[in-house]
Image (cartoon, rainbow, N blue to C red):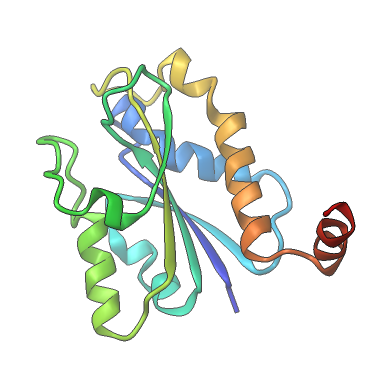
Length: 164
């Protein structure tokens, strides 16, 4: 059973809005633990609906207008951004927060962390801006750290106890 779902949201045809799928492609190049499933969602929740119903933790990666410099990385929960209006032109097929509400209707309430990346430019292109592309290693590192914190190995727990 998948314990952790990593979902890459965004449109890879809209330059920096495609950061989510690009991070997923990078993660899929290396071995992920068997309890982690990484999927490119694009703009459709059909790609990740079953994961939301069956996993305990969700890490979503998407572009996010937070007011920072291009490439700024934000870690937020759905509760922190609930009520914010979607940006015209960046709305996915169904807003991710709405999908989370729908799965809760079916009894699924995974713990969700959103990794948002401030875009430099949203325009028709399959290439990321240089400032955004340079953040991919850092973002994949954050994803791996979150996965480890959600499913620490027994050795990690022992090491934490010894250090304290």
